[in-house]
Length: 82
Length: 327
Image (cartoon, rainbow over all chains, first blue to last red; front, side, top):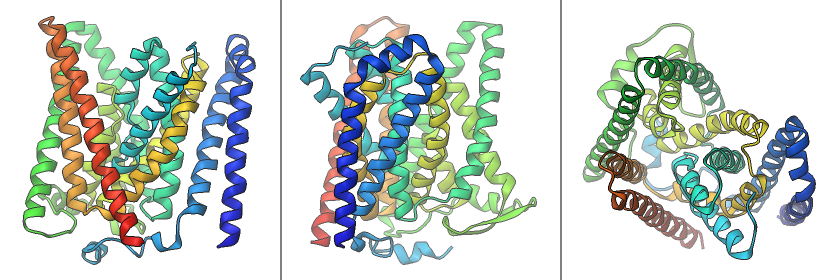
């Protein structure tokens, strides 16, 4: 469990650093929007995907193993028969 | 470009949080809430739409990863429906062009009638079905007449969807489902999640949670393309999108976690209520345009805000109950 928490903490730092990078480079990115549309589109898409992936991965590491799919709510058994 | 101050950032984060909850729980993007919100903040409509799609891309990644962890995503099902939807969107767009050539009034009327009828119909059908299941206390997959008819379709190739728990179903049936969703999305301009989730449940026979997770996965693929395309046209304000993503990072987790605790028929009931409220809001909005009474427009926005707040509260309570149970 310790490695999961350590990895999650590292990812959290990476997310904060990514946010810092994006927000501190706002003038540069805005300038890109004016000068090179393709690069701006690529940058925007990559930013959203990277942040989404990092956040998603952090939550996956933080989620307790008790929350795995087997431990679902009552009545689930009937639904698994299909 | 928006001028950012603390209150602006906080309102963007809060909106992202609320939309994230709904997105994780119901499996749709939430563009119908974000776009008007960004518009009222002062962004032009084209940038509000593009920014909303960029935010949906990030939220869909988070939601899909979490749903995948809970085995709520059937990748094969998601890819086939998305392939069908991409073709369907083009057909829907061509239909719009055809009606526009006949008359813009006919186009407006057709789109409005189809949109409201679909939302209303889905809401009533799902709510009644879920209510009946709830009363009979049977927490099982709904078996509608359409499902039984769909199962008669045995056009090869037949495929197995292991994650959705479906053995031997016609590839073409799933493709057709995606096509219908795409045509509707292209025609009415809405995401299509409100139609795809019920179709996956009642036609294919998916569990509600799998329908939600798979729909979110399909939306992720479509939104990556849409985000790139809108950004290319300069329609994305990436900073607003990033601020909203910070809120939805937490909201989505709450929404997805709540799907594990809530009973399937309650999830369908909430979905029906949500779609019904959107239908009501659209009706008020249309009426305000037709009879030119601005109060109706305000009522429309009020209904939307009330829906978001009440459903988010319901989902937070469900997630909290799950947390208490695991304590």
